[in-house]
Amino acid sequence: MTEAELYSVYKGVYVPKDLHPPESLKYCEDFAFRPDDVLIVTYPKSGTTWMQEVVPLIVSEGDLTPVLTVPNWDRVPWLEEHRAILLGLEQRPSPRVFATHFHRHMMNESYFKTKPRVLYVMRNPKDVFTSSFHYYGMASYLVNPGSQDEFMEKFLDGTIIFGSWFDHVKGWIGAEEQESILHIFYEEMIADLKGSVEKIAKFLGKPLSPDVTEKIAEHCVFKNMKQNKMSNFSLVPEQYMDQKKSEFMRKGIAGDWKNHFTEAQQQRFNSVYKDKMRDVKFKFTWD
Ligand code: A3P
Image (cartoon, rainbow, N blue to C red; front, side, top):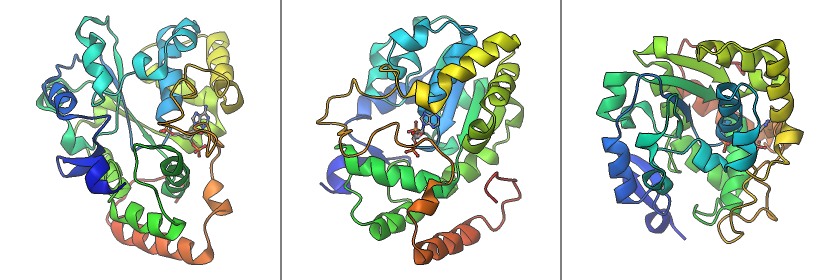
């Protein structure tokens, strides 16, 4: 199926129609934030699910119950997704934890007034590409990626769901409300998960004992988290996600792009990256 059939355009960006029907987008537009809300913001395939595991465990101080009993999409709901309407989010006790793939310019008025806390997770765009390429091949609500060359042009051009990686990252790293945002890299979580848990906990005003930090990091390491039925998307019917084609928890490493890019693809990606990021001073882990 084509983009026109599967996607709609919201605030200039493609979103999957099925997951984000007009009433969901309206709900999201009208949503009232609280200052102590925690918002996990990501471009898709940058570590959303990982954070949906880490943050609830920090809030519960290492009690595994929430992550072992509630699917990630209800535990940390995407505000733009149709399920958000059904979950009674207005009644949830603080601190509420949400996820969104929105660009900063797509956030509603309440966000800019209230300035809830944001964890902005970034990942090397080449790995985001590789992860997305596999994901688009197994998820039926997304347009089939075609060849790697074809999908690369769409990725670089931002004609995929949630638009351009470059615009997403530039919008959030350039946000005025920097004091309420913690920037965190997928690669730093891979390199030092315990240190990352500590850093996030500190940002959330919830310092943890070394034992609890250790317990959270141990549970959230790829090979362990992959076993959690509430987080590995095995509850999603095969007609939506065919994990026989590619698992959702696929590899969980930094640098897998090197196993997939040809020399020409690497050059093409680098040249577009250089052009689009030429005015950006921010220090990324992969530069
Ligand atoms: P790969 O396809 O490269 O394996 P998102 O949740 O934003 O959709 O991102 C999915 C990516 O994060 C997938 O990447 C997935 O394997 C990876 N991921 C999920 N949990 C992880 C964990 N605990 N450790 C490392 N990577 C994880």
